[in-house]
Length: 255
Image (cartoon, rainbow, N blue to C red):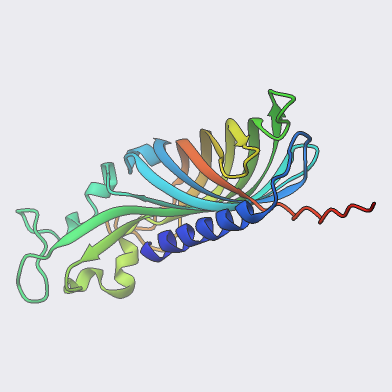
């Protein structure tokens, strides 16, 4: 996590300096340009996902190719993390708890367990920018559609790794890992400045995940979870855009 954030900052700084070094250019006409983006989202779950998780945070990155026609192709990856659990996620260890709700470790002591939400999405999308101003035809309302793989689970941390019931592969029987295809949509605004330094997008992003359990056995259910799930996420999203402009050719004047 820390390595990801540091790497992201370095990429942004290097790319920003590189773009600033490029001679000033006009973007008064629509252009074809590759883009790298980093994004931040606050996500609100719905459907079956709201029965297990609360509000989460999502960070990600993508590669986009914006065409002169203002169509955009995107490959993106996002990391989901949160600490608000609900429903069956709060009863994972009922079968191994004492009558007082405690779990005994291998030393006969009360174990310290913590649980979190973790997940990811990887996918591809197609979209288009609809300009609102002729003076900046690369900026405007952005609408995107796509799909990919959505996966989420409960991360279980045990200080000292001293609870035999959740060591190694046994932990997988408690983590409620689910995965499946998810469709996704985005509606918002994308802006490119002529200075090349302020480029961003912001809006609402939606996910509809058709998921199922990825584990062969669920210890909290004492059987395999065969239920199909419909997981929704509604997201408030902001993103930083790094366009990779081609250098302008040197100009020569002959007299």
